[in-house]
Image 1: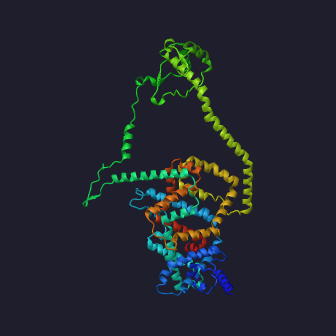
Image 2: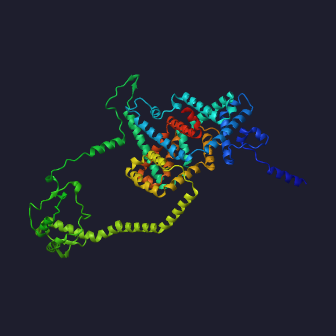
Image 3: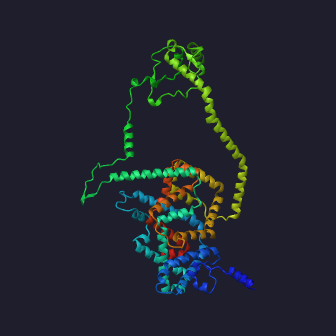
Amino acid sequence: MAHQHRTRHGKQQSQAPPPPPSYLRILFPRNIQQREPVPQLLNHPHPDLDAEAYHFLAFLVRDFIQTWYTSFSSDPQFVATIVNVVIHIARELERRSLEIDWVGLMLQDVPEVLRRHYTDYRQAAQKLDTAYAPNQTIESIFHGLQPHFALRDGEESEKEYLRQLADELLKILLPESEYHSDCVRWLVREILACLVLRSVVEILTEPDMINYIVNTLLVDFGPTEEEYEVKLQKAAEEIAKSNNYHSKFLSALRPRSTVRGKLVHRSSTPNIKPTDDMVDMLQEAQASALETPQHPSEQPRGLSKPERNDKLLSHRITGEQNSQTSRRVPESANHIPRTDIPSVLAPSSNNKNRIAQAEKSTFDHNSVGPNNGKPTPLSATQTHPQGAAEVVEQIRSNAVWAVTVAPKDFIINILIPFWAAMIVLTNFLLTLPKKVTQTSQSIAWIYAELDAPEHTDLETGIFKLVKEIFYLEERNQVVWRQWEIMGWPLIRTLGGGAIDRLLAHGVYWIFAEPRLVTYIQAGRRALWPGPDASPPRPRGVHEMEKARKEAEKRILRTIPAPLRDLFFGDDGMHHLAAAQEALEPFQNKICNKHLMYIALDLLLSKVVPEIYLATHP
């Protein structure tokens, strides 16, 4: 009996429900104590999404509300009221989100906002320290290109903008009974505007946070090509070395501004401390002086060659000497004739008899000299002029080259590549019917399963954005123009409808429940990365620089290798420069705030259009 009692007791212990998560105890302490079910966050049941959203909300309540509320009250009813308000707002936002054109927003509006951010930032960087914007910072120039009320007067205007925004949101999203309560409305507005929204904006606009987001979204693009990684590593070392020399050069050019409180005269020839590279460049420049061209009569005899003329050639072969006709034309050193690769493979048909007669009278075919078994010429200077002997020697070397070297070069440089190309073409033609069948089946499935979107040419905004990010037109204008004029229009003609359907399906895939859970998890881990869900500690300069370099490499890995080499070239420094240019517009926090508030206005104009209509009748 005792054994059975222990067994039953152990079975009861094993079947006991697990303790509720800590985040539920923060948000619903009364429900946990009374063992009541937790209310769902949205109108439709989404268990995984509700759990992750409650997890995120619990940390917000813990760090932004309980830190000051528990100092004068321990009543959990206030936290319960805040949670009920959040649940009501979330359900209303879910209802409104079902009516939003997410395809047009994500594929047309968002790429245009990002493209404008790149364009305006680069224009501001170009105007910096010029006559167009004297004594201005890049933040002030950028604010002139993208003015926004929230960033007009610094922190105070930012708080005022968020208060007005939160008040308009509560007016539309809250029930009338809750909104007309001044205490509830004021308290929720301050929590939403000053504690939640502003804290989130401050964190998300940090350059290090943007680099972290890039690394998180591109986590699947790890190092795959060892050779390419070595290439990038060497390029990074060269860039670091070049930047070090550049900083030393600028420090050498920068004179001391004051000495014992007195201004020092800025000399036109400052005391520059040269580096080894500077000395090498100066010596190379001095050694590369232009040479004075010589008179034709002063040039060496070895730099001249007979004038190539059929009539002159026949005179030299038959031994007719004419001082006026057989003159030599001097050439510069840059035009020395190459004897290893003959320029003429065979003499003309009109001169065959004369060349044969010259060879018969010039060479003794029964005697062989020490020159690798080749026919040794007799005393050519005694029988014929020197020019005729040189021409005959050149013809003989042409014949030897055509018999010995030409077949090998023809096989290696022409025949083998030709057959390799033919094999590739044959394999492609053999697999072409299968590929056409698979493609047609895929296109048929796309048209049958995926709905047609309301918009067309959905890829235009993405192409413009990618073009602006990497300067594709400036890097390879010929290829980009051919792609715009011929390549993509042909693809649109053949399968434009399928492309639009796939892009629209990709947007729906982005906002599916598993992806939303992933986004919330990434945001929670970014804001509370510690194992105990503690706020992030300040990162050092070395850690931030390391994260930025890793983000640059991940951006390059997302680009296919043929496209990288086509637009960036073979030099790894050009690849890293392109990645740095892609991330540079996000490395300034004030400029990032402009982007954040413009994106927030765009989103609210779609979700809560009443705000825009009330402001602009």
